[in-house]
Length: 193
Image 1 (tube, rainbow, N blue to C red):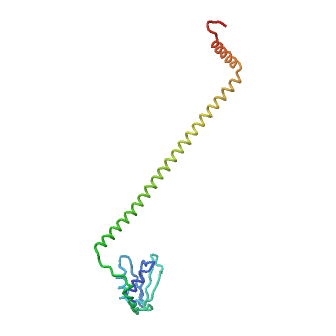
Image 2 (cartoon, one colour):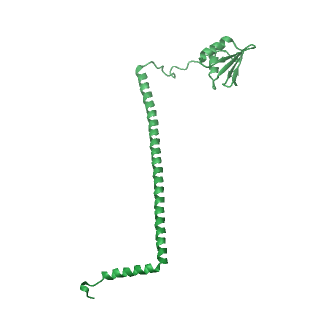
Image 3 (cartoon, helix red, strand yellow):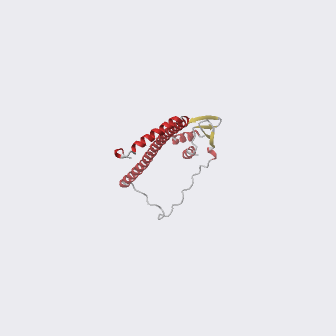
């Protein structure tokens, strides 16, 4: 198995957290962190292992391979397709690179502005919700206050009505005084009847 094939095997998902390489009866554990996959593959190829095991963070086996079982015969390159069907090779063009950079920056700015606008809309809706809740609480407390005042007025009117029923003399005096006031208002001028 070549270093390129070992590297391709190492880059398969899920990626290994560590490797266990077996050469004959000797086993060696290799740390993956901080190393390039190409360098690691070259090291493993130089060890000429019988078996390579990829382990996860917990030390559990993810996959294993026997390099001797993998076919090292290089595949013959595919026949060249017709030149007409091939896409033209792109040459380095500074103007094209500049255009791609500007397009990328505009796309990133658009993504950012859409995100910011959405956040602002969410903030506005939240503020309106808080204001509505405050108004509803104020309205409910005003309604309770008005209801309490109405109940007090009804209770007061009911108490006066009961008091009037209990004291008929007061009622008679009130009627007499009303009549006296009304009688003085209807006097003819100059005392003539």
